[in-house]
Structures are given as structure tokens and as C-alpha cells.
Length: 411
Length: 164
Image 1: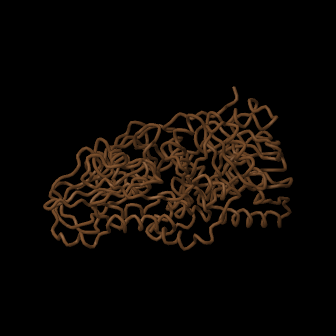
Image 2: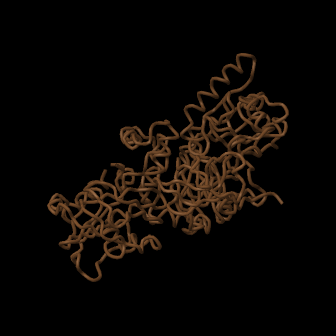
Image 3: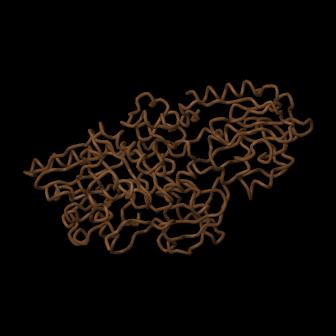
């Protein structure tokens, strides 16, 4: 029996994403591993600021600080948030064939990206399922920069490494560098750009969503990407780890306290409100990018040519339509959570899908969720029920994002 | 035991209120780092409180618990007439961050539930010991109360959990 405080949803998710182990055993597994948890360069800073540290994908990360998750979420959208996301894995591929190599593993048309721009992409397996999602940036023709999920790091690196070895054996020219010498900070919200502008000479007004630059920020050589995981305008800043603490302090100071340290709890609320997938919940090994609603990330040339793992399955789904689709859901009653059943609203109780993420939206003050339903039942306005602890509650499909996104796009 | 997942290294200074359970306006704090433990109540190690008033006992969750859970957005309660058992779940509290079972500190029959919580679940945060009560139970084994924690022991229990 779970007790009152014996449930940390996010930590469970992290465990689930990392190991796929049974839910009931995860708390115990997390505790056993606590001693071996990795710490980011900002660990002491988090603790000094009241961060509640929890195990997350093998790292000790702040789930929240002194502010509640509700307040943190609202403050990100009203002012700004600073997240330590150094647990995520930055990776560079170098070499004359870095792009052709990467394209054998992902669905994006990397070659077509302009230098210094990026896109969300998906690493696929032979069955067309998602190994991970990732933001990929074409730095130059010979350099690609990627950030992959912390919980997927080991399997991603094993996957990429094995394919790279085979590729190079056939005369390919690709090398990788894993950026363990760097930390990653996410600065998000309406004050992100004005705050960051105070720490760099680069004109950020000319840098748009998905743009990437290697520039000096606060006196250190950073990789700057205009991207994020909140639906707000913002940046992810890869900074040498020895400079991470100074940069974090400077960002908070320059915002005059309006940008606040924000933990993984609010990060999850924010990404859910923005309709963004959490790998391990909303996308898994058996989910294709088409089912996940990420067909837009499959480049036009890639649709014609294929050439990535599982292309047959994915191209067929693009043509014929997938059997299940990811949808956004509003529901009554208690907030649905991952694995809540979705059943027909006609009284038959027929199982038609499953919730993969859900919660109470701090901004909308109502329940939001995403999940997978049979194709045909995915259109906005379709009514069905979600089952929470044995009771059925009214639910309706709605378009995502739940909260409008505010990306800074080129005019 | 997953409470340690939420443990903060910030000092969790719990203080005993001297106002007593029957005081009209118990002193509680909204700050999560200064949760209140009321005198005159008994507590379970899973963070529920019970106020025994002879034939009927009132049950809710502690200030410490609500502070850790954060904003409560939904409360699921049993119907009057339901039998509850000591240590068994009788309801559910949903906060922004998690779903949590609420266990009954004593066995008995539910005679009343706090209907206000369906429309105003946040009463659990603002008034955990008064307006945020959850159920009233007719105890079937009043001696079960003896096994529960008194305020001093419960305070120590919270400190120990947070220190992990």
C-alpha cells in the first residue's frame, strides 16, 4: 500500500524511463542506488537554494526548490526559469561523413538544415520504434551537435557507438565527442532573452527558435541553442562545467530575482502544458514517430528515400496512417496519470487506449493529459472516459499545445 | 519510505503548537519548513491525524504531509457507511506532483465525509487540522488509538524522515 508521502511521481518516471522496471519496486531501487547517484556541477548550489534532491536517471537532481511546483510553473510563464539539465547528454559528431552517418539513425533531414540550425528528431530502431528523441543541430557540414535524454544515455551511446564502428569499418569518417566536460543550463520564459542579453555581445534578437551559436557568455565559451522544453521562448546553454556556477549565479542576478531556479517537477508540468513528449512515458521503444504525432520531424527527402532504421514501417504508416495516435486530453475528476485506461464513452467500457502522461495544469487549473487512442478516435472533440482507480471520468480530445507556445520564430 | 526522495537538506524545524486540538483557531504555518503538530491529536507514521471525541473520531492529514505534497487539487473520499481498517487506504489525495493514498489510522465505519473538499480541495493545505478534515469514523476498536504516535513522537518521526 502506498502511503501518503510514499509516492514521487517524477522519480518513478525517471526510474521507469531508465530501467523499465516494475513501478512498485522503483522506490526501493532508487534508494539502493542513492549512494551512487551522480552530481552535477551545481549540486551544492541547488542544496544551498533549498533544492529537494531526488534520484533521476542516475543523477541527484532538484525536483523543486522552496517555491511550490504550481508557483514555479506560473513564474516560468510570467517571468522565467533557470533549470540545471546537466544530466542530459551532449554529444558532437565530427567528420566529413558525420551527417550521412547520423541520417542512418534518425528521421530528420539533417543535410537540409542550414548551418547553425537544429530540429527535434527521433532515433529509431529496426521496427520503426523510438529509441530516444533528441534535438540535433547542424553546426557545420562536418559537425553535428546533439542532446539526448539522461535516462537513455547508456543505450543511445551503445547504439550510436556500435553503428559508428560498423560505419567506419566500411571506410566512413565519423568521430564522436561526449561533452562530459560541459554542463547544460536551460533558461526559459519571457525574461530569458533580455536576461541573457546582458551577459553576451551576440545580438540575440537575430537568433531565432532552433538557431545555434558558439559564443562567449559571461566570459566563457558556450554552445547556445534557442530551444527548450517548456513551450516558452528560451535557450539551452552548454557551458564548461568550471564556469557553470558563475553563469547560473549571473543569470539569476541579472534578472533581479525574477528568473527563479526551477526543478524537474515544474519542468514536467511545463512540458506537458506545451504538449511535448517525455521519452519513457509518451514515447517508448514500440512507439513510432508517426504514432507520436511527430511526422513533421520526418524530412521530405527522408520520406522519399528512407535510409534510416525502421524506415519501411514508418513510411508505410505515413502512407496508410497509424493504428494509434497520441492525443491531448482534458478530463474531469482526479488528474489521470500514466497508465490510466481510456475507455469508450458509449457505455460499453471497451478499452480504446491509455494515458501516458497527465496531471493538473497549473496554468489552466484543470486536468490535462496525453495518451494514445485508436485512430479515428483522435479528433478534437471526441469524447470518451478515463479510468482512475476504478472509476470512469468524462474526457475529451483537445488540440495540443494545451497552453500556447511562445517560440521566438523568424519573421 | 519514498518520503526520503523529498528530503531537503534545509532544516525542517517542526514546532509543537500549544494551542491544543480544541482551540478555535489553531496556529498553523503555511511554510513547508515549519509545519505544525497539534497537541491533543494522535498521528500515524504515514502522516494522518485522528482526533478522538468519544463516539466519533475525525481524521485528516498532517500539516507536514500537506506541506510535502504541495497544492492539493483533488480529494477522493469514501461514502458514509464504508468500513475502514487501521492502516488501510480510505481515500486519495492528488497534488500537482503526485497521487497519494490516505490510510485510516483506526478501524471503524465512516459516518461523515467532508463534502467541502470536493469543491475546495485546497482546504487541506490551508487548514489541515480544521476545515481540511477528511472523514469522521465511528471507531470499532478504540484501543487502536493507543498504538498511534503522540505529538512529540510524531514530531520526531517527521524530523527523522526529513533527515534521510
